Amino acid sequence: METNLDSVRLSGPINPGYRPSPRGPVLGRIGSLDVRLAANRKEVDAAQALRYQVFVEEMGATLPADAMRARRDFDAVDSYCDHLLVLDTARDGDPEDQIVGTYRLLTQSSAECHSGFYSQSEFDVGALVARNPDKRFLELGRSCVLPEYRTRRTIELLWQGNWAYCLANGIDVMFGCASFPGDRPYAHALALSFIHQVAAADADWSVRAVAGRGLDMDMMPSEAIQARAALAMMPPLVKGYLRVGAMTSTEAVVDPAFRTTDILVILPVKRIAERYVNHYGADAGRFAA
Image 1 (cartoon, helix red, strand yellow):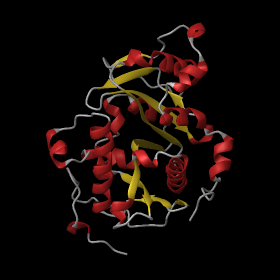
Image 2 (tube, rainbow, N blue to C red):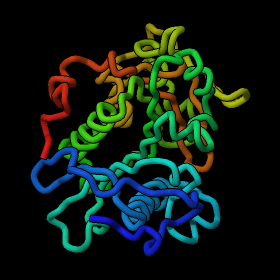
Image 3 (cartoon, rainbow, N blue to C red):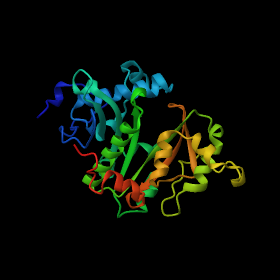
Image 4 (spheres, helix red, strand yellow):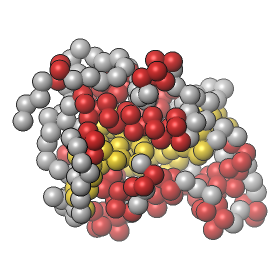
């Protein structure tokens, strides 16, 4: 179905040539939940409203004044990304009323044609990309889910969508910021030190924070680190990245606007644990609609 994109609204700045992908096939389905890309500006607007609800109303982020007035989390990067959506088709209303989860997907080619990656404001991802000229990178960001949908099914569908998108676009490496709540990094000393110990990226994949913003994650001696306690202190998204085989930066960065402590996660596709590839299918067919 062709959509008149000029007749619907997308909050915030938008490139004149911006065209979200037309509503394509459902990338995955579990029960009444579907995962697919946003098809029009109304759906992107709804995803931004969901992000506002989670990041501002729930987590206390402070956005620019125009975003706060619009009650939407938006920025210029939105205009050249794809927006992955989880929809509960059992909910009443139009598709934009059914959105319960979202992820923002930014390919290297799109970033290079526009203003770059979002995470470059915190980490030197340009150096990482430059060291791997034969690889295609995908930035994952703005992951959020409504509280009542923070279940295994929803998370599985978000990963199903990411995996299907990677295969369709020939992606070699996924990366992006993963956040700990709060702007006091030492409150997360145990978890950050454990991550540094078990998942720090090697020289080929190492990433430094932007000059003057980084804080060494190696905060505690190894003998003081208890793995079970460290894992219990991690946000589910961070634990999920580690389980699938991701590496991380060795520095954390405080994001004062979102009131978070961020690390950079790097996940080469070839490093994804075999059990997860088998779970979703090498062709992303496990949860295909």
